[in-house]
Image (cartoon, rainbow, N blue to C red; front, side, top):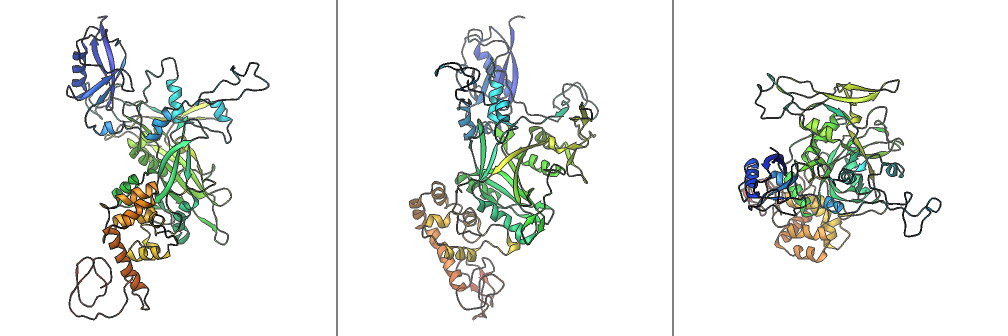
Length: 593
């Protein structure tokens, strides 16, 4: 019995414990592993180390000769094309970069306390670890949450170097496969029952700073509220970079805001299905951008003469409502953070939430947040509900015959200063929120051109439409003669790809590369293409009509002159056969040539 051992094997699909013996051969052991995980014999590779070194070969050597002991962790990686779980193991570039950094906080020699030579170190000047809470609390402003990579260093910095570290995702669901009793609601046991959850303030955060590249991005987003009084929501597109003010920290830089189709009122927002969602993701990826978060307004005008807004979100009311926390948790679950230390291949999220609301000075402020991993789990497993009459309170669902919900608790102090545990019915949402500093740079940055500006999508209610008439107007107002500056607009590029008359989805790749690399020669090469010549012809047709002295009808660009022919006519642009007596094509809305 002493020769029986258990080896832990971690894969992108989770960790499993494989029983073996010391005298068992590596070939027999790998055969067991393949059967346990459901892989063919040549469909995976097992390594002794997480960084894919020291491969365990299929050979006749025993596990004891390979120095594999009881309780050791091995790492399995599928070979060939990875499945969905394998894809989550593709760690973000910023995470790979920070994992290679030392992260130490170096201090100068203290002239009063240090009593050693220039080459020596003492407790007053020795470098600090990136997770040193005392150092973080004395920064200006103080940092309440260490960075996620500093948290990883704290877990892996002991004598075992994180050998047994595993970042487990919280599950609120009953574990499947328990055969000792009838399924819920007839039965449940301690093996399949999820653990109770005690909400704690998260000590780390995945994003430490949010930065808009320039004020123009935010101002154009706020224009919708200024003109209509209705709230607005948009998706933030940008990139993740290093934030050097905090050790091993990550910054989310926002380069553009995409506004999806939505139904907006003064106090509500409702998203509707977006047919352009896939195209937006494709364009952003080719431009080197990704969806990093979402933004919404909660603004109520106080004095329109001086442009002030009401200060409604504060410590006496709430910072995020329970419904907004649930929405943020939903988005964060859709954009999980790849992590090699997690058996599931992902842990937490880098997806951010930004609220444009009134500040203490009654001006518009941008506040950044994330919700905790505990909140993500409660939202993912449908255990959290908002309260109807108290936006600052959530409510943990009660178990029913359809769903078992574990007990959720939170701790607070009573009037005597004692820690009291309360059942989360209701639940103050501040236990779920992590605040993030939102900034604008002193020197504006521009991924896209600063001027002029193409109309933003889905703003038909304002009369701002994306069509070839607006494109012709946009090109005629361009003061720059540099073609790259003219087309470096996120909303313009989206229109070129998604318009119904002349979509350029399959032929715009070269232009997107030019905008991404700011290569004017590459842009000029694309300008000579047949596609752009067709676009120019369409714009000149619309522009020539619009520059005439005629009165324009409500159809958007065609003169209201009577038709000269009583026969059906074919559109020169899309070949659609139109009824007599019309001057605009019913299919593409372009004028009769």
